[in-house]
Image (cartoon, rainbow over all chains, first blue to last red; front, side, top):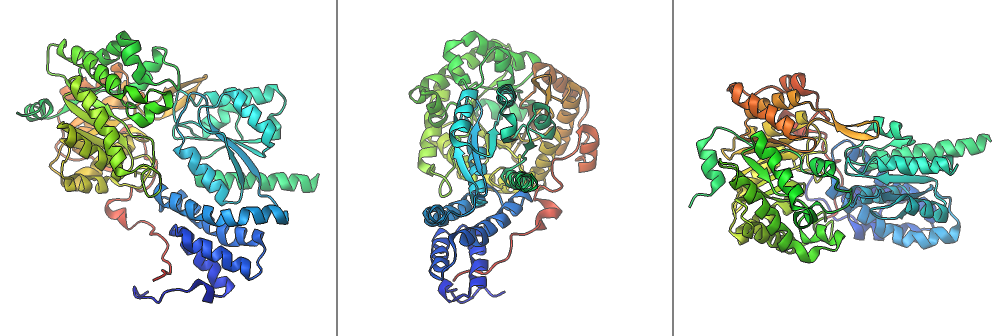
Amino acid sequence: MSDQEEDIILSELNDEELVQQMHDDLYDGLAEEIEEGVNILLERGWQPYNVLTDALVGGMTIVGVDFRDGILFVPEVLLAANAMKTGMAILKPLLAETGAPRMGKMVIGTVKGDIHDIGKNLVSMMMEGAGFEVVDIGINNAVEAYLEALEKEEPDILGMSALLTTTMPYMKVVIDTLVEKGIRDDYTVLVGGAPLNEEFGKAIGADGYCRDAAVAVETAKDFMSRKHNQIAAG
Amino acid sequence: MTDALTKLMNERDWLMADGATGTTLFNMGLVSGDAPELWNVDKPDNIRALYRGPVDAGSDIFLTNTFGGNASRLKLHDAQDRVGELNRVGAELAREVADASGRTVIVAGSVGPTGDIMEPMGSLTFDSAVEMFHEQAEGLKEGGADVLWVETISAPEEYKAAARAAELAGMPWCGTMSFDTAGRTMMGVTSADLAKMVESLPNPPLAFGANCGVGAADLLRTVLGFAAQGSERPIIAKGNAGIPQYVDGHIHYDGTPELMADYAVLARDCGAKIIGGCCGTTPEHLRSMREALEARPASGTRPTLDQISEAIGGFSSASDGTGDDAGQPARRTRRRRG
């Protein structure tokens, strides 16, 4: 591969090449190129939903896999997510107009007593990158705040984050409250945060523990497809 | 004039630092989400008791209760206007406990990350990071801290901003990063990267190293990574007492005092000069570390990764991005626009 490649003119690429190029540009966090690519595909008559899934979600999946495998790190993921956002800003109103199918919806927040948000924000971005609708209720959330958001937003997934060993037990308080109210099974509950592990997730009754943002996306997709299968079977 | 830490390092082959702060404060009734730094003023006796823990257990260095004492963190508690006061008092209480110990104990002014992400990914500029760290450093200096102790940093630019702040405050400093993501920091910095970066700074630290992260074994692998760079600069190892476990509604670190004693001796063999603990490390752990460091001779040879995992447990990832593995799975090759 030569360093002295010709400039690639996005509009001169055929659809397949352009989508490949957009995957590469997302990987490199090039927001302007993504914006341009999305507009070209739309001009060529692509459905907004197909632009989202093929060009953007497809590209972010590669970013997610390399993040999971320790090849990319937080800075690269943030840049990629930022580029993704630029594309989403164009697509979002169009998706709503065209009534495109939804991937799923997630309410996410850091638990009471915990003010850390980098990990949670990363999960939000990667989930959005995967096409999910995400409602971020911020840091330091008491159980009431979760309940309110669940009622208002009617999400498929509840995500809880904690960075401290002293705050992670609060996740159980939230889950126990859901059980008490008889609404636990209405949601897939995913938990994450540096001091957590698989056993902890099981011990508190979560549906899944997600080691990092990429795993969160995989797990969320997995649960959504199971849900769809159930509906189809039922 | 030579600073107190340099003097002590010249006299001794190894120094013991302290253990956990948060774990201890929560046991005293600090509520999750409250700023520990407020206790410097509101509950000074608790903070004195916190400081006496490591001092009585034989630590040569202990950290002030000022980890989150920068304007960005304190803003979450609406205490951003109290940076100078909270840091000064945190250091004053520490000075008092150190001076009453009857031996040389170094007061290290703890400086934790801002919690913000730096440009271009985030909103924090280098200059505003320097300004925040500098404000904190002046408070710690006024309160009598011997040295600034920058810790749990993950971004190289934030580390550099702290170095600049120390320079502005005219304070000697030490700086550790937290290697918690496949042997790297959250921002992708390897042990080799940090060792190299430290030598490139206009105002290098007295000592550099690693704190927190995953378990004690991972931390030692990181220390081996520093040592492999051949730096003469003293290395700091402050690892967690094992991995947190959830037992009957409580969090418990699985590292026993015996394990931490083995960790301390191994850390010294790996090339660390300043050895301490981090989360979950109680005075009981520190006592057993001190005993081991005194009783067991330094081996003179660096332990292998196998010897480390055999003694204190396995690693969280196969590679840490350094050494023979540096040719790790590369980023995707891709076409570039010109």
